[in-house]
Image (cartoon, rainbow, N blue to C red; front, side):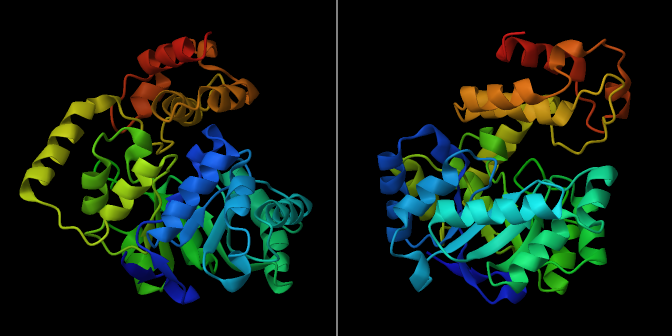
Length: 336
């Protein structure tokens, strides 16, 4: 396994990290086996989130006796808005991980001017996270999000140790500006969705493509020993010309129906969070996390079935997605 520096944190992280979302759909015993196999193969960066149900707890169980010796680097995140909520979530994460500090805690899913304003206002989540860092409960702080331009603005305004963003053969919006800025300012870069949320069907090939670029670590989700071994094997492996051709073919096969979660379609007149609903559908169908996705779908104030087919979203979408048709498919997925 090759290792890279996580920006100014000075931490050396495995270039293939471990995405904790799929741990939700396996048993605690299976999770222990999967996580320890990842450790055996040299993976030392593990990412989870407060919103990933029992993912933190399963990681903590698998790593008993290892965290205090710094054999692993734990990252998690929360999307709450207030100082009190953030301090609470940090304490819950510490308890679930069974540790007294967390290496990296991130402000999760930074999107929307109103949400961001609340997070950085007096008494906001940013204040709570910085306080937890001063107390030694959190070592480093970062941000995650799906909109590179918005993340870039935040990096220019505030001091963060890391930034987490989507990057793969299809989603390359971070390449022109966000990644170079992060490198210039020694900000650690964490690539989420390296397999495009499970859409890309050749994981090893997709990861080898990602590894050609200068980021710190990529965090594909893993739920089986086979997935761990396949992903870990991509480290240090060269991408062949034949594989590049297959990636181009796969990208073309995805066609125009792939949501990049750029948010240009927002706001919807009916209040539908279109990118989130389409992402939940992908988790249901690609990660086999239907119950998890359905639970979060039901929490949405506006559902796909509330669409009046006005077409405003399609006019604003830079990728010309047939959003009305996609929302109908979303209805079918979640039984509306």
